[in-house]
Image (tube, rainbow, N blue to C red; front, side, top):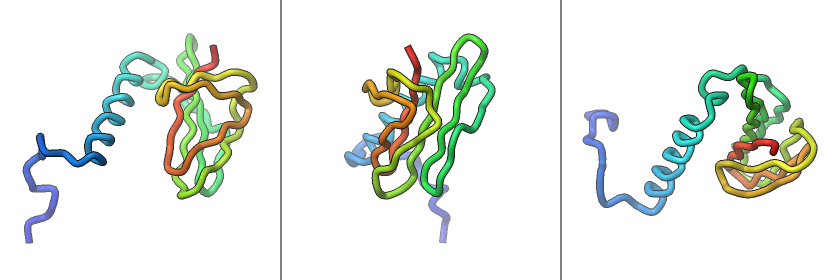
Amino acid sequence: GDPDNRRFMQWSGLSSDQMWLRARVGALGRLRQEHPALRRGKRASLSATDDTFVYSMSDGSETLYVAINRGDVEQTATGLPGGALSDLLNLESVSGPAVRLPARSTRVLKAP
């Protein structure tokens, strides 16, 4: 009857899904460390649907855009600036003001 949160942390023998999750959390942590706007910036909501949420984080010297799709199918996220955007999380280039988001995915975008 002991709750699952009392189990010891698993440090080795991770499944491929667990390894992907650990790498993803690490990448998000590095982005947060490298971009003060993600830590101390002001958040502004740009668009939202049942499955997508787009917001900006700005600290005065830099603005980053976060687009999230929690749905099980690909969605289009809107409300982004037009033109070229760099996806810092997935290391891709996309174009705004609307971007495609694969199912259950996130993009952290920066205009050049």
